Length: 295
Image 1 (spheres, rainbow, N blue to C red):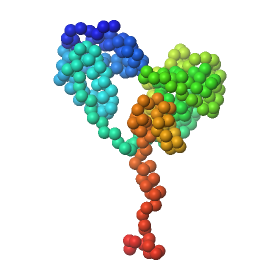
Image 2: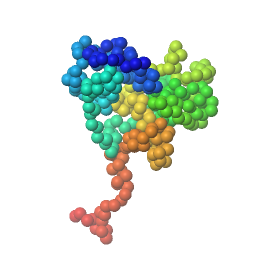
Image 3: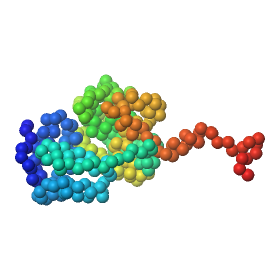
Image 4: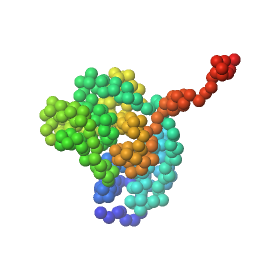
């Protein structure tokens, strides 16, 4: 597929469609193509037929920042910048927001193991067995929500799922207990082959629907809404694994990370946890010969 030639003045549905097809030819994942298409369509609505300019891109970037986190805006800019380069208009590319990585995870966003278990129980009480099993599958294996289609009847028979994501293949090992639960779930819903988590029409579940169903559990489980999103289950898996093994390299392989520095983000704990560790060091002297140092 050839790139468009000549200076492109406006963004059109046809240009977006051609770019998305080109991305597919570059073997980008379906999730990436879908995400890029979404941001490009949002930008097209914003432009409303106006000519492309660096000024309009910067204004859109500022508008996005007013209602989105920097990391989310950077994801949108990645879609736009790639599109502009494809069009032969690299001068339109905008700079990414600089994001300083915090050593600690904000406590208000860190999902605890007990909160996770309350979500699972809430799903059971709501008689949403599918969601209950999705929560446990993601959290006990560390997979991404986009990788759920690789959890198949065939995978749970051998305890290993062959997952392809972001151009890389890896084996995801499923525990014996998880396989037993998934076998029972599959049998109860007459799922004999292929994907286990499917819609009524037999298609893969939409991640937005899973997210919506998870949010609905918040009040019943007494878990703050800002903590309830699928990727937080993956973070909980990473922290739990690292607390036992202290092996970033092995954890990176399990999570499918090519860079260990990415894995470090997943193992961050809240500052409150750090303070508790410092207190356990017992390095303060409060008494001398039975007499308090501070009288």
